[in-house]
Length: 378
Image (cartoon, rainbow, N blue to C red):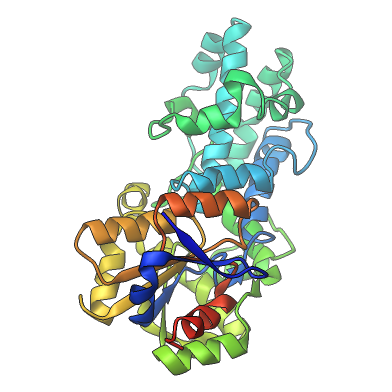
């Protein structure tokens, strides 16, 4: 599949046979994270801190901060196209390490004792649950389970992260679910920890209407910065009118950032979908979250029907798959523009994009006016 380099400095590419479709764009829908806002120091940093806090503070392991999960590790999850949701990604990372712990206990002949002792753990509230996990810490210390060793296994042999990612992780052992409760429908540990780290205690209380448990002072959402300039947004609004959003984050968080940076006027609220609070259960998130196209296609049809050209701008394989699946289901009026600036390895992401036949690859959203003008559409 041939891609024409439109701008060497900005690394802008267009698939040779997609130029006509790109000229026909009349509406644009954007992903939020990594496309409209830079999230490597917010959402992705939250993943790192969730993993650190669970193992180092909750379970009491000694480890080096920022080593259990790195930005490069997170990118590996993202590149599978299966971990668009960062709650799910955090849980998967914790599952990875708990799996290694159980394998080591099995090698030491202690796994049955571990299961017998902790199989009946029940989550009632966060404080009492964390207290009950002290017994887990004491048990693992008795068998000299070392988290530093596990952090060094990510890139080695049969236990490395790449091997873990090739396996079907749909079914988690029940003991892991009990050691690290994750639930979108009712109180849990993992989502709550994630949201409190990401929002900080004050904003968490404001958005969720409940007091903070962990009392993190800093708010990582407040380090997010808008990627497109006002000039870019003005040009896009002039050509396409109001713009749409299709994002996995919760709506209150999206609206908070749009209002904070005074970008809310560029978007039509009725043409914006935030899956983070629209999908109420893990089963719904698995079934209807990215890359499933069902709700995305409803948005497209609501905005323009089936004839008018629509571009979706995303920053990962889940987004490319979303458009690919929608087109396979009959939504032929779509084009996809893949952003690479949010990736830890932009060259690898470019290669993956081309495997999925994306229509254009851009450094970031500020390249869109240039592409359209170069093709005679701007």
